[in-house]
Amino acid sequence: MSRRRRQHAAPAGSGLPGALIPLAVVGVLFLVLPVLGLLVRTPWRTLGDELSSTESLTALRLSLECASLATIVCMLLGVPLAWLLARGRFWGRGLLRALVIVPLVLPPVVGGVALFTAFGRRGIVGSHLYDAFGIALPFTTPAVVVAEAFVAMPFLVIAVEGALRGADARLDEAAATLGASRWYTFRRVTLPLVAPGLAAGAVLCWARALGEFGATITFAGNFPGTTRTMPVEVYLALQQDPTAAIALSLLLLLVSVAVLAGLRERWLTIPS
Amino acid sequence: MADDPQLTGLAARIRLRRGGLVVDLRLDVAPGETVVLLGPNGAGKSTALRVLAGLLGCDDGEVRLDDEVLEDTASGRFVATQDRAVGVVFQDYLLFPHLSARENVAFGLRARGVERSAARGEADRWLERVGLSSYAGRRPRQLSGGQAQRVALARALASEPRLLLLDEPLAALDAGTRLDVRADLRRHLRGFVGASVVVTHDALDAMVLADRLVVMEEGSVVQSGSPREVATKPRTDYVARLVGLNLLRGHAVGTRVHLDEGVILSVAGPAEGDVMVAFPPTAVSLHRSEPETSARNCWAGQVATVETHGDTVRVTLSGPIPVIAEVTPLAVADLGLRPGAPVWATVKAVQTSVYPV
Image (cartoon, rainbow over all chains, first blue to last red; front, top):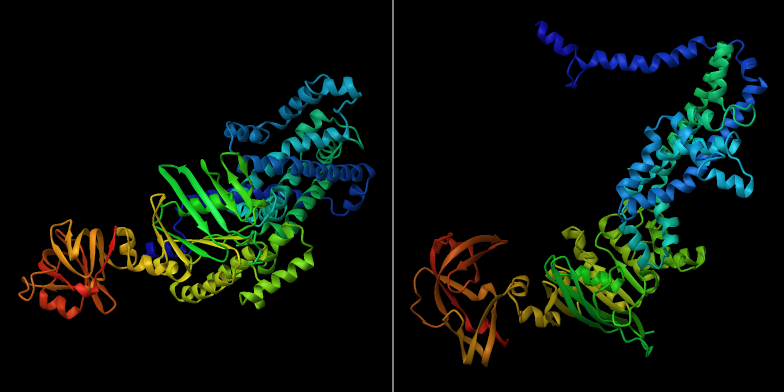
């Protein structure tokens, strides 16, 4: 009788081993509690004042602009790269794919240092830029975009590559038999077919760029108005004024959630 | 357009190696003519079609369409697919899933620079011609198999190709739809002024659609001719099976054919030399013991398989002369026909047709 009751107590139809359930619950709590903590500790009454400070607004605007620019850079470079990886047939494609994913697993700070060695004033490319044009990239707003794009690009490339692999390459042949040039086919057939994947990749890419901290502070520094993005602002605020840090964090959280929720309906649902 | 002296149709000589298969064929198709490439899977039919479409280059050969050389391995000339006046209907249609039926049909015109509204108007006219006016706004996934096939045909024809290629155009359809779509397809092919090449492995599709049949096996042409000629005088066992005839080979002296297997057949018409003898399964009678009436056209064999086909039964005989006989279920019971049973077979002379090898 008691055995039977215990069976009834288990969720209907689930054949899960019972031992997994407590761990899963702990997992959920582990993910939800920090967000809950943020909401509980938010200074709701003074929130307006905390957020309307000039520094916060400047940092927010800079973050949004840089993340968006970085996403555009990733799309311009990442879509052709994804196309090469998905449709190209050449020696070393596996190696190239691994290289593309490196920023995903690389600690962001290391990424920042790596960017220095490439694009810094004495970097392997940066030194030539400086000698020829007097351009020094580090510690400028473009450096923020570069750092964010470097870190966020794999998200876009992987998403678009997956979508391209899922799209029937024979449709390209069908388009060719109808007189379509390769470029026309890419625009009218390939790109629309991977649009959901591209949108999903762009959103992930943008979210990653928005939250970028390590590579940005290493390569672009921390100058109010030019390179001090929201994550950096939050980090600095936490040292001096934890309440302000919480308020800023809440704002960043809301922006991220809003974008994901807003795009989900339009783009993230993949047509069956 | 049919009177245009420059319309000479397709003249192709193709040779290429694909994996273990060497595809080697000559194909000439007059304007307005439909040639069906018939053959088993892996015979190289689709490969030949891809060469004609320019989706595949050949190792050695020449493809001419009207006054234009599309490919010539000797001179190195190769016109890219998108620059050929060739329309293709693919086996699973390959309609663009993100475009409506109208936009699918308009695609070729748009790709060649026709302005949007003009292209759509033309697409609508084509959809009307294939009887799908009311489906113009639908996406491919909202179309039935037969409808999708018609859209694919309209899409291929809309850019006014001079060569139309169809790869197994009916294979993806169920039996019911197939009948209608086949008849429609035939009507459209009759109305098309350019040359058409259809690839199929289905004998009935081939018979209905073809002005001329070209049978391919293992990369080469084994027989060609009018559907009637192929259906009544098969030249290979594959073709014979396909058209449902028994095929034997032998040496004719007058109305007697000495079969390679040693039996002498008495046949309807006189012939001389090496010949083929074809006859339908209904021309074969089966007996439990050696028939007393006539010693001609008679041999002993063994039942290999017994299969029901509608209200008749097909009996495959093994032995010196492997043939298929078609008998009634009653005969099966009376003669005790089951695999392994010994049996005597006779062939009615009047139902045989004899033709030189």
